[in-house]
Amino acid sequence: MSTPYDIELQQVSFQYDQTAVLKNISLQVKQGDFLAILGPNGSGKSTLLKIILGLLKPSTGTVHLFGKEAKEFKQREWIGYVSQKSNSFNTGFPATVFEVVASGLAKKTGLFKKLPNSKDHLVQEALSSVGMEKFASKSIGELSGGQQQRVFIARALVSDPKCLVLDEPTVGIDHKHVQSFYDMLSRLNSERNITLILVTHDVDTVSNRISHVACLNQTIHFHGFKQEFEEMSDEDREAWYGHSVRKIHHVKGEACNHD
Amino acid sequence: MIEALWNYEFLQNAFASGLIIGLIAPLLGVFIVVRRLSLIADALSHVTLAGIAGSLYLSQTVPLFAMLNPLYLGILSAVSGSVLIERLRRLYKHYEELAIPIIMSAGIGISAIFISLANGFSADLFGYLFGSVSAVSRQDLWIVVIIALIVILFLRFFYKELFVLSFDEEYARASGLPAKWIHILFMIVTALVIAASMRIVGILLVSSLMTLPVAASMRLAKGFKQAILLAVVFGETAVIIGLVTAFYLNIAPGGTIVVTSICILLIVLIGKKIWLKVVTKDEGVVTS
Image 1 (cartoon, each protein chain N blue to C red):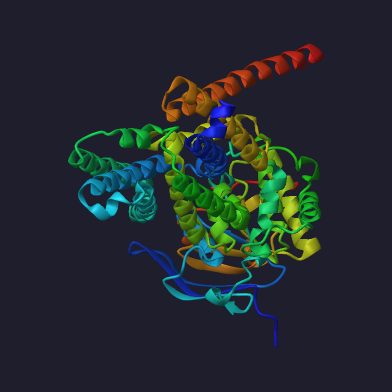
Image 2: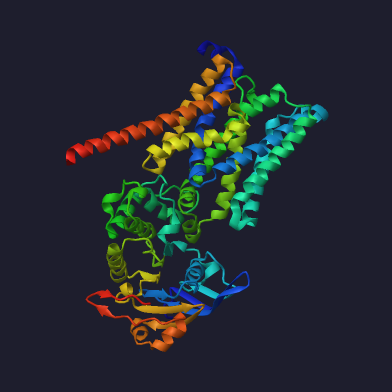
């Protein structure tokens, strides 16, 4: 039997107050994929992620996670979640980086139990993989936006997930740190074979790192390898995005923005 | 004072319950403050008042209620209030804070009716409103002990989930934690702590013992456990100083405890400001 997809959506639609947000979405993500979900504002990107994470239930259609139907799937710790920095927490919260990362073990440890003694080691390991090992005793509020976002990745990594879901993780991060942030994601993908699903507007910064692209605007307009996406015609892009989008041009690692 | 404590049971009751409440109110208070539920604690305390006032009225009219400790009806209304607030918060999804004035005014309104029916304020009621050193019975003390055990067990079993929930609710739900159930349990435990604290600090000031020590500790703590520890230290200090002064000056302990908490908060705020000034000055000298 072939290995099941990490994530598989079939004919998924979602309505909010009778307004269709997602229509007829089918999407497969297999282990080790680095998928970027692109789309204009209001195209339903975050809703799609919430459906994958089980935060929202689709109006119709089915979601399979690691070969199991979503409601039967109990190993939620296999899917790590990193949300937009801006709306995830209150910067005045009195917690150390260590406490925040250790909290990523809560689900895996199970109800009624204390975090295991191995947590010190696991937290340090997760922090080193995002280059934040020296910050464990700092207060989370003292860190810069980019550093905080690394800590949240460490929180997702500490439970040893097979897949990471990231919702515009670079919003509010200083531009010069965005590159190194994506470098780190690429490393996690190539060295640890972690599946990555990334919603982003940084089309150009990520385009040389990802393996797959899904273009979303209520429905999926394109889903396939990055190479095919780059060969997409201007008309197709316009049909998807709603207005003109320039092709991606790479100039010495830097890239132009789409309009 | 120590001799009096040795001789009078009422003083033992008051001090023992005071020390327990000084522990559990700030302990739970840290979670209440970081989850931005401080005002909900206030609303719940007013609902508790409705239960107490109802019980005091019934004790005058229905012989059966004369034997009943008003705390029981207080606890019952606090717990039902906490469940109701949650329902309202879900009903007004985009205006969650609307649940607070609805429940609060319902609580005060019902209390006003019962208080009027029971022919106005009595010494009993005054004790419930602002706390009392002399009115804490042995039975009250046992109720406080049982509630404290529930709080400690609750935090022992759900600490890590509560931390995740407080820090980042969406993440908690995304990682598959039973966020909804833990939150409902949390609200019920909060209602219990409010009912327990009421005898000492009084209904009108209950939420202050859950929020003021935390407000001070948050200015100093680097981490969450440290914030909890400091809040408990500040809470206990306020309770001890407050109860002793209340005893000697014959004042309602609610007042003295809250004023002590405010003093602690002021010392922390001013102390931190001065300390920050000294530190930046020192750094300035080094760098220049």
